[in-house]
Amino acid sequence: MTKMAKIVEATGKVLIPNYGRVPVAMARGSNALIWDADGKEYVDLFCGFGAGGVSGHCHRAVVRAIRSQAGKLMAAGNLFTNEPQVKLAKLITKHGFGGKVFYCHSGAEANEAAIKLARLAAGEGKYKIISFNDAFHGRTMGALSLTPEKYQKGFEPMLPGNVKVNFGDLEAVKAAVDDQTAGIFVEPIQGEGGVNVASKAFMQGLRALCDAKGVLLICDEVWTAPARTGQWFAYQHYDMAPDIMTLGKACAGGAPLAAMVAARKYQDVLGPGKHGCTLGGNPLCAAAGAATFKLIEKEDLVTKAATKGPQVMAKIRDAGIGKVKEVRGSGFMIGIELDCPGKDFVTACRDRGALINCTQETVLRLAPPLTIEDDILDKGLDILLGVLKS
Image (cartoon, rainbow, N blue to C red; front, side):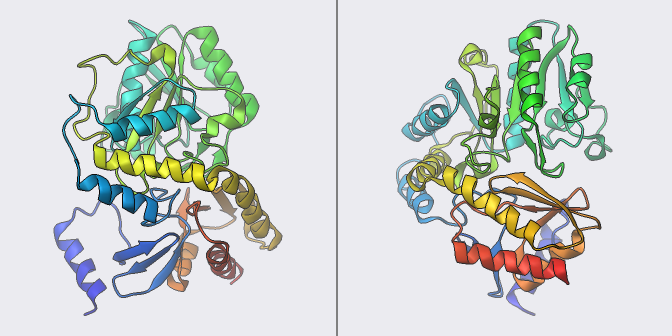
């Protein structure tokens, strides 16, 4: 039995089977390459569901920051502050819309914090949240309430007051807003929903509606930020800003860190005792996050995503593959809609040495690290196109 087979077998005995794992155990990674326990190399075009989506696997700058911080302080509790938290918050707010930051571990937790902030800020009697069909905001109970019903089965009843309408349908949103509405949750680009890109008119319409009705606009940027779409944050494509923004996945180069950012108007609503997260923004993860944001600045990864992403999409379109119905996305967040199920193409790519993802049954997703080298990107795309043509 190979080393990987032993790990896979042990996994089945000791870990809860909630992920539907493939029989592969990963052992090490470097930028856009990752190797399994038996030494097979893969071009990672999805990078751990986007968790390594900025810096790739084990970027030296992030590793250096973690090693340095690990020798100083890893956790002291959030009754005390620490320098890495402050450094990262300054970078987030500098490139965003100002305000203040709350730290946690995952995008779902950031969305939970946003729900609480929206309810408090909207005022007494306002508790309803509008979200969108095909959205994905997480699997905790509050975030799950905002997520389509197919994920909710067996966990009902959900958080009261959630209303779902079709993504992009501004008139449906207007009809859904009432005197009890606290907030509207929207992904500028729906990731799990199939890389569905919001129009400028829709996003600006949401902003205007929220202003008129006294409702908070929350942008879930767990997938889209930082830098992935060719802007620091995807809302910046729309010449508007939300009241709350949630971040996760790629914020800390693979370390578990997420954040909720509140605009200045609402930045002090969550006062002492209103919310918390024991290890949220611990110095180790915050240092990794600060290193990640500094890396984006140093290597101008926003511009790289903005320029290379369209080139990748054009290459796929120009391949003239009949089963490809549409290629869409923004920057390095790319969806390839097929006219047939995509699951087998994911497996075939993995067998040939490239990692991609399929969502909504027919949409292949690419989210390579922004630091990927051109030759490695071309290698991965050649594998993908070869599989699609076969």
